[in-house]
Length: 401
Ligand code: SF4
Image (cartoon, rainbow, N blue to C red; front, side, top):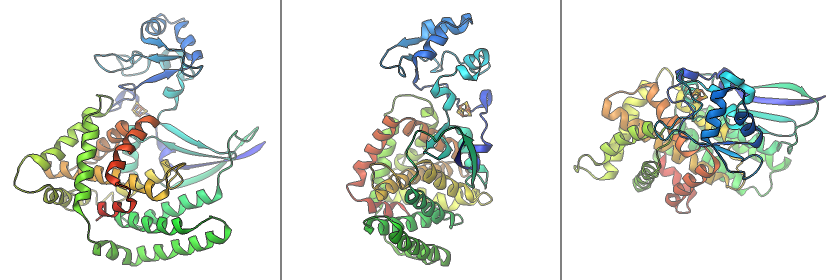
């Protein structure tokens, strides 16, 4: 037998699908691809309804064994044809969970599989996942356990250096109480140091560890916060990013989460364009003030909420170990996403005079549903952000503070 290490944050264990009670179930507005075996299972099912729906609503594409059929969702409701009147899945009800397609049985779970380790996570485009991240102080506490398997996984071994870099970045955010922007600034400085290291080996790891310790000390002493506050930031970067991102989402075809996200984007557009009494940069400042004056005080008792979100992003993306994206570029993307979500929440708070945790959950799950539901979508979205970055990763500093 082989020992496999399972590494997961607490929210993975506490997650349980809310099924029929879900505020925006995942059987809507998406594309479900079925493998050959699953298509056969449905089209030959003894259950008349399952079989009839399969005959009427599965497009046979035969692109590959894995990509054999596509489920056609209702043009009227956007729902999966197997979604029943009790807001539950007919396939699961009548044939059991083992009959679900790979996509349906996995979502919202996502795993990183290495030879002797599996890292578990969940996709935050599920509202229940977002809800746990924002409501459970311990959601991002990690635990490890060992399970026994016949064989090692058929995958590459984990890189000890990559694992360590991820841990360093997670703990720089974990050092701050509520001020994630200072934690992100410390992470930028850490990555600038890493960029100068030619090869990450045992010798350079000692230097990296020293650099991390200095940054951690500056975070704890308050020096880092003062340094960030003393930087002068260019509001034009913020204006460009916000205009571009809202444009990306508003032009997207209607899919799961789009109505919810557009509801919050409307608040943002109202705050930016309803009156012609000030320039866009001043209006951005006024919206940001609502973050300090309304949003953060509203989450005083759950000050961990925003921090949990950044920790989640670092874990979910195995940050900064992206395959073909340099670490600073990868951080730019996370900071850009954070800033847009911050402005959506602030514009909502400014308009209503208050904000609930549910608003934050709605913004975050719908944002991720529209930007990161699959690899192609994520690449298009990041391509969009690239046009603001203009080749300068460090311009992300203008989005902090
Ligand atoms: S979105 Fe999440 S909570 Fe809702 S039905 Fe899907 S898995 Fe369950």
